[in-house]
Length: 372
Image (cartoon, rainbow, N blue to C red; front, side, top):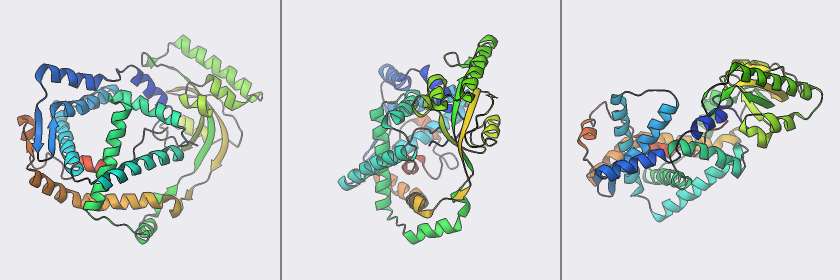
């Protein structure tokens, strides 16, 4: 079963947007700038060297994603983003310079374990996981090898910080947190169902279909509904007709909670069905939907045994974040880190750069593509 977070069909719409993006555009843009203007070192210190191309590759990827979302960022905020990204790159290098061979081995092993757990928890095959991840990587202009290295490095950073800052979380600590934060472990009522989507969006043009095309989609869904109610296998119909990519592999299987999909009409219909009942046609901004209910899952509290490892990881992150500003400040002092780019250096002032640099904190994040 898969848990829909964000918008139902987000994978479908994201695929459409990403398909129009040059897979390596951000990296190529950074390479072109380096060819034209050279690739100056913008920050340096003992064990630290950040080049303009490294910063530009990340910033160009961020700009592409911002543009794809239809948002705008002021030049001032973009300059601040550059400074924050640079801070993260410096912090990464500083912490990685402290990694022992044992840290590197443990970090890579933890990365592989987290990747395997992610696939298992999300009920994704290797092929499904790779397909979803590749969509995101195209938008970011990253190769799979680059992504693996980034996530592996972040896992190594986490391992170094746990050792250097002497983090320690016991079973009793996890139990205490679990007992004191019951709301965090409440699983809401959920619907387990199969779903068919006929999109009313022109994915190539990123625009709604014409009225005539939408009428044809509606007629097609009416025909599918008749076949489903006449007893045809709903899963087979989903695999044959649904525009949701997951349907081809999973027959449109979904697991949703209330107020998670961003589609109130869809949720209202899903939670009103009885077991094995098929909905009428539901219209949302994504298109036309059919739902067949498999089961309703009552709200419950998740057992500590199922979340203990995650709780311990979160508590370790809390310990790291409390100590990290002082630890990083000491590393920068020891490495005599300098910002060589005058514009970026000018932003290095109280109130401008966050007290808790972003990069090492990222090491605690799960390495995962966005879930449906």
